[in-house]
Length: 246
Image 1 (spheres, one colour):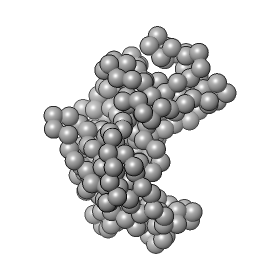
Image 2: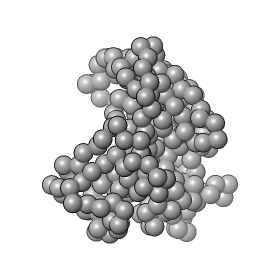
Image 3: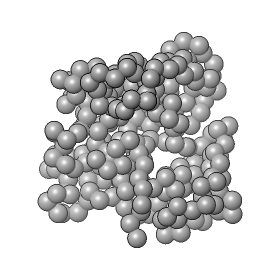
């Protein structure tokens, strides 16, 4: 059965957003980002930032209910600088649910890109928390998510619900654990903005510069692309708009 809903970190379909984990910190200034040496992770500091916007012409955060408001992060967090790739997913989950793979003309990778480095997609929210917990366990970290009666160490992919499940909907997340998790809505928006406020695109305030930062309808050929092929935003994060749906 096809999975009925998707998540990301950005698929035209959705993919899993880069997992994140908390680092203790306190700061009242605007969040800033620091690349963690030798890793693909960026640490975004605690701080206060204006989110939302007054609607003008942008597309990154559409709809009228995003009136400006301030959010304060009381703790820093670390986030991967790219979407979870098909290779990374395969290593942990032993499968690849992605639509964009194989030799079909509308699905196959372009000649200058690597298939395994395209973002994973057709991933449900249940799948995402399993991936995060299994990755935490593999790296000796504390899993953040708990589902009553579920042993994530032995759980198989085919046993993850493919429809809405009341037990899984009661999942809890312990933000004090040091393992991987999905970013909150505020964390994701702060990360996606890359230090910019107002009505913005990923990495820029100008639609004329969007091609440099994002794969979208006008330049993607209606397919996903290898991660990190466009310029990063101001926080050093790639593909925070386009390539896949957030």
